[in-house]
Length: 141
Image (cartoon, rainbow, N blue to C red; front, top):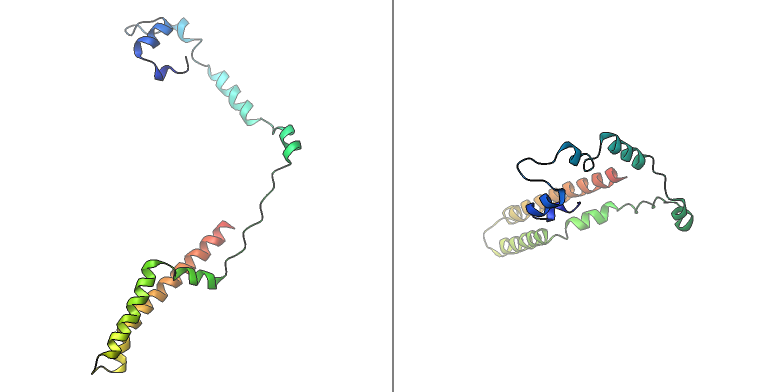
């Protein structure tokens, strides 16, 4: 009974002709359980199994696919700036620069400090992202 896990307890007990207090006798359990020798024999068969020659003749041998072309570092950099959060931060840097420029009484350096910090963070983020992606591509090869 291979589907005993789907059956009720009573159905399983009736199938094996036993009761829940005594269980199966040794004679009843022998045909059910596989011996260690049978299990080892099955493992050897699976291990020594040869590929199906008919399938090879029909479909051909397995071939290795050519590796995908390497991604250029410029496209990796561009990819880093296509993220929505990065685009929002770029917009914030531009808006911050424009508002600082329009504000009277600020020197040139005071105007560019905040946008420069945002841009510096984004550039650092892009460098780390490109480095990680190129390392991942090399690991795949």
